[in-house]
Image (cartoon, rainbow, N blue to C red; front, top):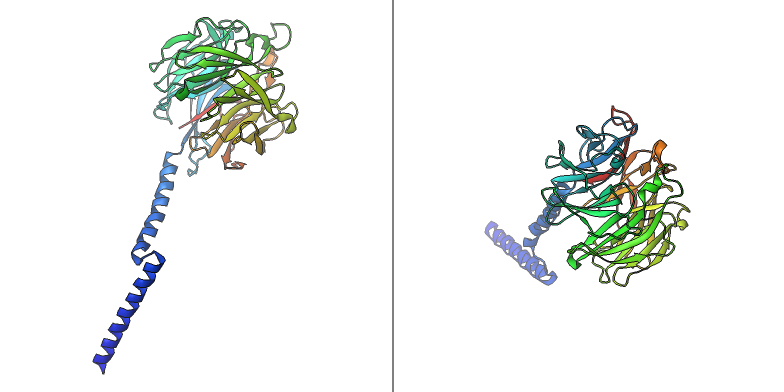
Length: 435
């Protein structure tokens, strides 16, 4: 009897296995795939960890002493979201030697290999000081000073474009004495001054501030903003603001055409749309408050968005775009806001989010991380104190906003106030970079 039961049980188990095999064939799945499902989950977790490891861990902030007495400095901030010290100051590196203070720290640029951070002094010329400063950030927690430069034909350092082969292009908004014309200065990989472009610059209104490049189609654009000397009290009259974009042959460093934009006043920044087959760009008039779509091939531009619908007189300033060209971020300085636009249809941008940082916050410089998940904002534009006409102080805070496909969400854990973060006293944060 026991033998019969054993044979019966064995046959029953065999039948169950056979039926299970048939069912798995009918569904297109097999028991052997279950470990693969777990492997896929493990791989996804590993990929996420890899992305976390690749995310930027250090934030560099180029800042100036509010009193213009202590040296200007580079601050290193913990930018690791998983660290208990996220948002705290790791280190500061003051500029060395004579000419260390009062440069009015402005924009920055990180080299393509991530080893050199270039920083500009907007008003160094007023003290006859060097205007461009290079730091070694190979060891980001402990940067070191490399050298400084003072281009002979230009002044008023603004934006940096890191060249693919190493080195930088730098927009200099003014001539040697801060008037016009300005130049685009080139430094090679060894950080040596190559030349100041173009050899014969336009004499009318050439004051380059913003710069954007698409090397794959040999295209560069710069935007003219203002004649810098007219911002000083010693120069009578109003500010002399510009409304034009220059279209360049990138490889030859040669201006091909000028796009004069009727009604645009103060075209402070410009961004080529990545991958756009028509080689178009965006620029904004800071004073007139319009966003313009620039046709670089035809040399035309037209308004496609009115920022007064968000805040009249809000001063749209610096711009950043996602790598697919479908999102545009713009700081609105006097409005205290940062706007995210859907630009998937370039001629019809649409507001996705208006991030309100509060009255008198003064957001200006913005930077988008490589993974495009975080937008960093510094609240300070320019205060010429007792010697000039521009007084846009802001509240000296640095913010981080999380970026999703349709939203900007302020990170409450990152709360960095340059009024209180340093023993030397209040400081003005401006240029931002990370690695």
